[in-house]
Image 1 (cartoon, rainbow, N blue to C red):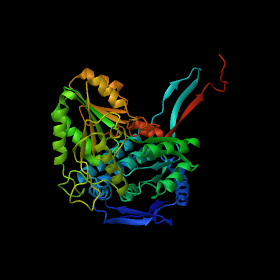
Image 2: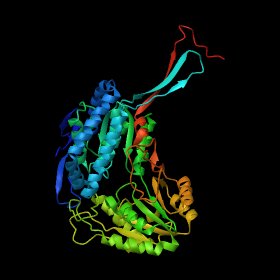
Image 3: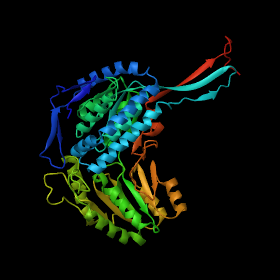
Image 4: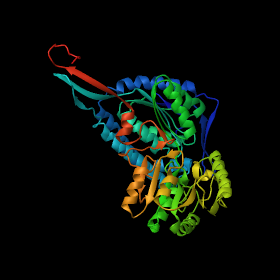
Length: 488
């Protein structure tokens, strides 16, 4: 395992006084690694090195940049089991889910490799004779990235891949809880032939390393994924000095199930959406708004399914749900469980499972009869907790779905196409699913939300690429020396 930071093509241990301590959340007595954290001085060195490397990278034709990403897909595919195991060990995700995350990151690499051939400008007519007008896209320079622990491979990849193919250099701060996976991502790009200096990894803490990236005058753009409170602070600080910013933040995603929903399809989708990845994903299903006519049957099936889930280490083949990532997050989730017991009816879970005391485990939990003003209905928990609220029809479902400050993703289960399309048009989320879980995204499709979920441009797809570029408009006068007349 590589430890430390990666600056100018070399692994090193910074001289910071703080330590990064990487612990297995399935057994907190196991320390995977411990090393000095990076400092703001290391960020300054990383930015300077990235600035030097980017000048040459910007002159490399975009298709050739894409070929580096294509080689990275081949390296990652060869190392998929190694990547999945590291991810599972330090984040807690079940190996099956970890492997799925690695494969998703590979799909993102594949898509962006092809984008090297598709960085498009436009040709547009000029209102003046003998003037040719068009647009081109150019890289920004050095871009900063602050990435979370819950998808420690896929999210860094879907930020880094478009930034690199667009011609930028990167200074990245991964989560201090998942540095192993981040180091493997660097190794993948290194083995693929990415020139030194274009991907700088500074492993440290948000209040010094993250802040130093956001504040550095040579960082032209900042891409952040994390909590809403932190993201809004990042947005304000970076925008204040004129940097481009995109932030993907919280979610409180709802499934609306109408009276005609296919319950046999709905319940497995809810179990996957609420408890997959231990509920620690921004697209997780945290609310079910279910028509009263089927609510009892659905809750009964959910309780049976939740109780049947085997909780255990991600490396246990029999386990279906892993641990919470760190002690602070565990305490947060447990606090919401106690709150939920006062606000609603506890139907399943509600505490820590027996026999797993050395790990940060919590039971898959279902609350029923949750009032819309309850905190567990409105606030992001980021754990395996599903709140069920009965509704009377589509209109109430839409209103309840929209009655939170977040707007990432949503879903409706119904056989009525008209009702489904009305939901699609009126629900206040950036992504909408019909008759499938709230989770999931694809490399070629924009990812992002509304309200306090997102600020700035969408990620992934061509939108994600274009965030890392500046558009330039070009006027070519071929009138043979005749001055252009700007006055009609």
